[in-house]
Length: 352
Image (tube, rainbow, N blue to C red; front, top):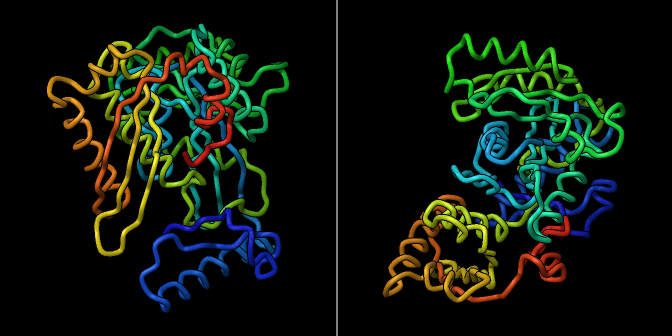
């Protein structure tokens, strides 16, 4: 069940909670049953019943496994994952709810040591805004790399006085790729030379140690009402995730500068009861030479991209779709603050 918490009506029914809108209804009986369930759950959590609920910021350098961990925490794939650094551009809100807790996890872009474009600086601003009001912070490091201080990551991610930072957990990820003895040595180093509350080794890829991370988070979250109905896993619209899936396939199919020069927008999304849903997507690049590469000889590269993206979109939406992709040139879009705000990099996800 998908519930949208953004509709402004019917607030009198459940206090200050917005209207709960079922996204893909099938019958009036089913709708009534689901709305009743959602309203009862909301009332229970907002009136009197307390849970461990709060916000969690996920920080780290590029390609340390933040998105993989976020997906493991909520039990499904929301953040795109590739083997290339700086895949995540937006601050992805992931909501993980249990019978007595709700953690709102912010998967953030990797902390950059050098900002090359206006896009980079806006992404880092989003990282800081995610961490500044977090109830606790998770810092991921790569177990395969030599241990290093995390002060720079914390300063860039949290900003301000590090003495006032929230409870912080250091997560040693990719422990499956090194020997147990090496894991123990690196744990000892991070416990000795970093100012964190605890260090936990995990393998986000295989889920090892994720429950230990969850238990640590729950021990730090305040007791209070839940922020969202229990069936919500993110507040981003479906169109946002459709664009992210296309962008993931670009990262997987193309090399060098191409993935980083691409911006993906959903131009049109039409639900058709008697036919496949129609989705029109545009890919923006900065140069005509990049456009030629994305399309490929006789359009073969673009066709391969569209097929891979369509299959994943259908799996995500649980329905058949017709996907149309067009490639356009928008020079220097990564330096245009107005365009970047329009594309959602100002912190507010827009339905484009």
